[in-house]
Image (cartoon, rainbow, N blue to C red; front, side):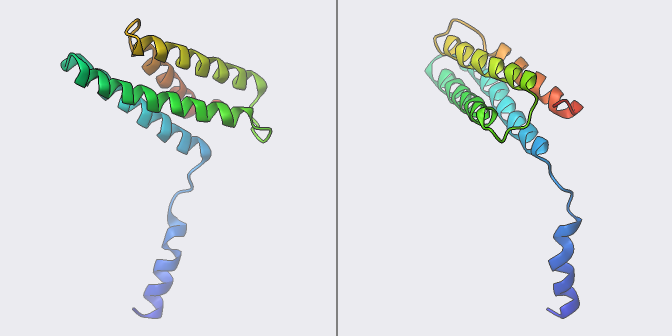
Length: 128
């Protein structure tokens, strides 16, 4: 490889778009939401233990994501406005409680999907 090619490859990464924290958060929430949607579809198609196991795994991952968000929200370094933090804490608590209801077969997963979709809309609209 000659020097010109080495220089091009060394600086080619600089052309890549810069990803923001919101971009990463969006990707994480989108992935969790897609998992919930797919698991809901699978659980609906496959009644019984097999379908429910897929749903339970997606619920666990979604709840884990919300727990990580709570830890980040509680950090002193988090610069979100307090009202936004309060709303997100509320959604995390709702998610925890509703997930338990879904796992005990007393509720449907749709509400959790809607919460995640609302967060995705907020992240895309530029809301803080």
